[in-house]
Image (cartoon, rainbow, N blue to C red; front, side):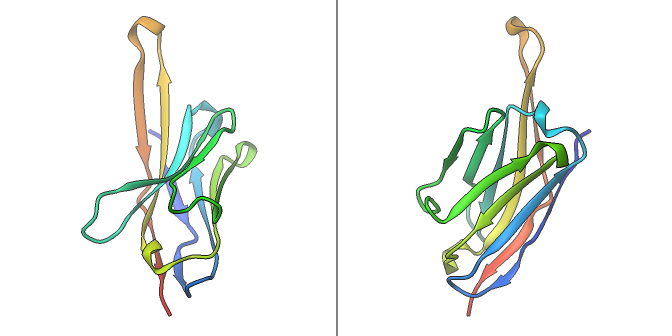
Length: 123
């Protein structure tokens, strides 16, 4: 069973920065993609940023130009650099990993989630 452990959350003022980390218990090169999601109180969980195994990235419109997702395969760690944070960025941020395996005619999928790390943007 793969474990994902997030860290780096905390309290930051509007306009500030944080860097989240997600340490995996397995080689992250096995995953088809990894991603960061966030969930604000009373809201659904939403995709923030995703990076494929080949390094292709995409972002939610709300964070485009302010957040950067990256990964370090040798360290088995996923990162999210968050700059120019806004109060609406207050949420629990979750690390996610997705893998597909097996023969083409019977592809199986697995998804893994971390426990989340709280980010609070407030003055």
